[in-house]
Length: 125
Image (tube, rainbow, N blue to C red; front, top):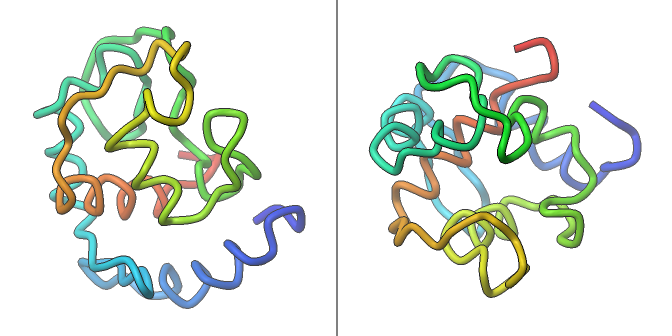
């Protein structure tokens, strides 16, 4: 992981070190990566993003979602923390009103699951 994101790296190191079927995000909740993979299809995220391991169109409207855990910022403006990723997934227009990312009405648990899936990816995925 990038040394530019030390707090996220420390928080996620313990969370992603094992192959558990879930990801505990302290103070946020529990996400299930496999459910996250399904949620990306349910909310049609692959209409705009390439998401490793999720079958969908090869569209490049939004950025590819591999390596999220190694990014310093989300949406170019938010420090990359699990809580901010959940906020971005659930209410992107409140963060960046000019963004092409629509508010898809993603619920709290699906957002946790999506975040768990994304944080398990690295740049090689």
